[in-house]
Length: 378
Image (cartoon, rainbow, N blue to C red):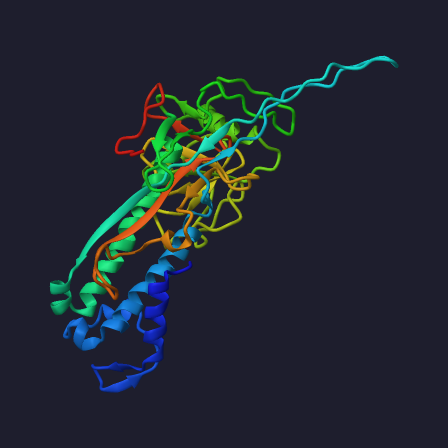
């Protein structure tokens, strides 16, 4: 991640100085991590060295931004664009003609567009001048870590809302260009005709990737996975469920479980060749069904499943960020204050919108008609 000129100036100044470790009296030429700073509770940041604390915070924010990109890579690609064109839909066929024949000219329709939201997300830190006179490095480090976790939770909530809310909406982009943008969801029967698939399957404007059934069974689970698979001939499918639903999915006809490597399996039982992750009981792959990996994740609502094609030609979402590199990622927002450290908030500007409308589908197996999960924002 690129940093602001003020930030780069701060880091250059800090790097030019040997940081004195006031806990031991020794000269320290390296840098501190936030983990180091969480142990420093008996000095103020002024006594410890404000530049050293500031450098640790800024470095950790940069590392956090890299981690966010890596953790969301399965779902989203980053963009600075407000909207992009969709693939052109055409279900045309060639026409037979005789030796002097000529078919009439037909021009394809212009492609539709999908838009992406962007919002300002803040986490209050309250690092004003008075607080920094008495704050310890540990307090600054723990506040930074809390802010990073809060922003990561907002990323997850935004991804979930972008995929699991079926209603298109208009977003006003006050962050960048103050322009209204139509944000679309997965295919939701809004009249958009999906492109013909490589195996020549055609669709119509009522095509819907939000499925519902009052109860989970083999038929509806197959329908979910096939709804995504039918758009491609090269899918790699992962179905996300809440850990509380793992037993229900394991009971489906055709489900192949992953087994604990310490367990001897009967010779007449079909099991996955990979071993079950016994170290993580809540977020892991538990087996295979209908060609899809079944994966538990705590952020999935109970009673819902999301199937994603992780091998799609384009990722299902775009994460929109500001056009200016210095405004991208989680950063210190100093307002009218002066670096280092004095700040009102940690701030990040981003938003998620669907780009590849056929690369995922959602099944609600709690209600007879699709219902937006409780607590879903956006």
